[in-house]
Image (cartoon, rainbow, N blue to C red; front, side):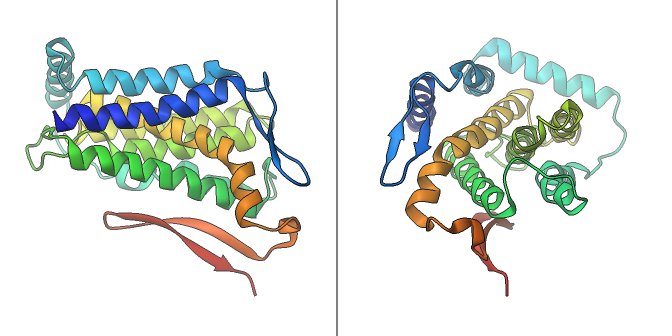
Length: 255
């Protein structure tokens, strides 16, 4: 019962943001924040939402649980040793956003704005993943713990991939392709290393993508409330961090 309530609450949260995004877009004005209708394509929320629903249904569906087991067995037949690439690849798309800037390839937003959006995405993703993990009981394939659902590594990777896509999609499609390729590989290695089921990975991917999309929607309001009008010249930046099992953000000041 607790598991269903938690999933319902998280689903309701994402649904409310999706409905908001379907009809409105936050835009800044001098004195207030207005809602400009018919400027956001709500179809962008269909795929990540479907992935989350698939993962949630996979917790109790006999057919999907059977499919999870089949995927696990198929991987075990062709795997001789574990690889830990996923511990690093989960952060690759996010890091690449700042690395490309360092190489002179300018993104859609400046460093400060990207830091705010990245931190917001990370906080949303981390809060959702940890809430679900703490309120559901889903045994990992290797039987080491009961917090398998959803995959946090995959959520982090797809969050970064969507950030990379949003910031560089106008430069070249290959930035988006490479980011999502790395994220997909991260999800694969979570199954390869017997740490997650396929449904865990699917839900993690959906949460990561949707967290980033919501962060872009919230950014104008966050910028308006917490930063001054001349924030373009601000020397303060927000950066996400992950320490053991703790997620958050830190304030960095340029001197």
